[in-house]
Length: 150
Image (tube, rainbow, N blue to C red; front, side):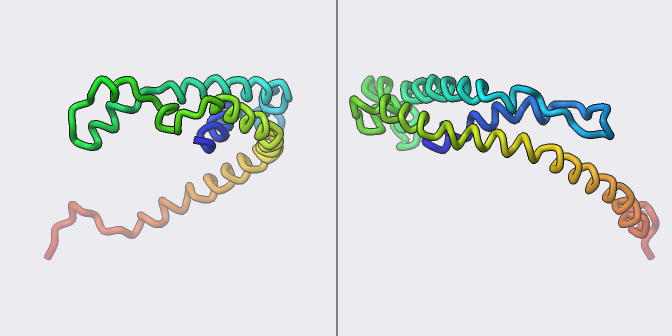
């Protein structure tokens, strides 16, 4: 569950950058301001806390009953991730503390990703350009499947 809380903000933050069109400056992409803005990290931290609480309240008893091959009981229908996690009354605070503790790493990761994104995109573009002719050359000598066999 910790991995979900940490990786979801990265996925949400990466979406605008991947959708960005190449800029006019020599084909280089323009990094959206949201990726480099520290406020975005704080916003993602708050979102991660809310999403974690929603995940903790998600019902899982019926799924467990289905996996076990039986009909769910009324207790199964009420069982949530929070119940399965041990029913710790301080669980919300512990999870929120873990998310808050991970925020500096999340922000550093976002900044590193934003800094490396232009070179990654340039390398991918160069690889695509090199592969364009390679596929045509590789398939040029393949036999024609409609040619009659002897």
